[in-house]
Image 1 (cartoon, protein in one colour):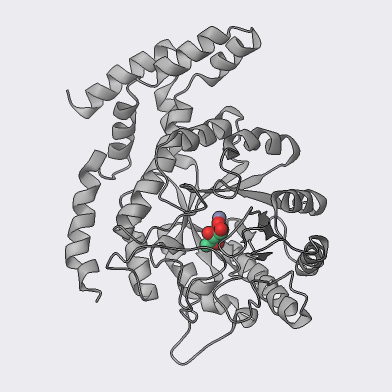
Image 2 (tube, rainbow, N blue to C red):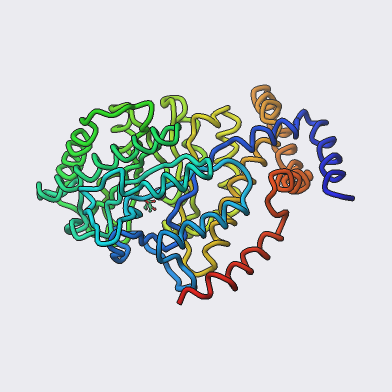
Length: 418
Ligand code: RNT
Ligand code: ZN
C-alpha cells in the first residue's frame, strides 16, 4: 500500500467515529507553533556570550552548536525544512545582531539590532515573537532583576523591557502579525526568605512601569511567565503562579504557563480550561520536565497529547498561543529541535483526530465506562498513516527519513564547527 492508500483506509476508519481527517489536516497546517531560537546555541545568544544563568541550565557538550547569527539562521532553516505546518520564530533579546564594532547594552537595544531577524522572518513568511532577557548579565544582582531592592538594578531592567516592547511592536509592524512578548524573571531566593511580599511588590511596580509606555495592544501581546523554583532559587520565586495569573488578570495581559514550572504532579493540561474561562488568550511554553524543570526535548507523550487535546476540544486553537521551550545540549541540536516540533504538531493532530464532541456527550450522559473504553481504543487507531500523509503533503520528510538530512548536515556543516 502506498501512503495515499494507507491514508484513505485510515480516513474511513476515523469517519466511522465521526472524525473528518481531511478537515483535521486543513486545520493542523494553519496552527502556528512558535519555534524557540535558543535550542540552537544552548541559550547563549550573541550580545556578550555570558554563561547561562538565572537558575536554568543546559547540560551536555554535543559538538556543532551555532556560534554566529549566520550559523543559527542556517540551523533554523534546516529545522524548518523538516517540520510541517505554520511556524513563528521566538527570539530572545540576547540574540541582537550588532554591526562590526557596535554594541548596545540590554537597556539600549533598538529595533535596528533585530533588522536581520526581521529580514530572515520576512523572507520565510514567519511571524516573530520576543522575550526580554533578564538573565546571563552582570546587572542581575544576587539573582534579582525587576524585584531587586536596588533601584538602579530595577531601572535597568525596566528600561530593557520597555525597549523590548518597542522592538516587539517593530516586529509586528514589519511582519504584519502580532508579536507575543513574554516576560520571565529568574528572581528568587535559595533559602527561606524573611519577606515574601516586598520583592513581589517591587516586581508589581516594575511591571506597572514597563507597561506604562504607549504601545499598540493589538500588535504587542505582553505575557507573563510564572515559575515555581530555579537552581539556586529553590525556596522562593518572586514570579510565582499566583502572582503572574493575578497580575495578568489585573492588567489585561496574557498569562504564560510553562509545563516545567509547576510541582511534579500538577499538569498544565488541567489548567488550560480554567484559564480559558477567564482569559481571552493564554500562552504556553511546551517543554518536558524530567524530575525538575530540565527542559528536555518535547516527546509525543501523554501530557503533550493532553495539552493539545485541551486546546482543540475547547475550540481554542486561536486563543492558546503555543511556543516550544527546551534546550538539550547532549544530542544533535537540529535533531532535538525537529523531534520536539514534530511532536508538538503530532499531538495537535492526535487531538484533532479525537471525537471530542462525542466523548463529551458520553461524559455528560454519565456513560463513563464508554468514555474510558473509547479513549483507550483510539490509541491504536491508524494515526501514523494520517501523520505520514500530512508530512508528504507538506513536503517534509516522512517518518524517520528526516534524520538522513540531519546526518548529512552534521557531516557537512556541524562537524566543521570546531
Ligand atoms: C525559564 C523559562 C524561560 C526560559 C527561556 C529561555 O525557566 O522557562 O521561558 O526557558 O526564556
Ligand atoms: Zn519557559
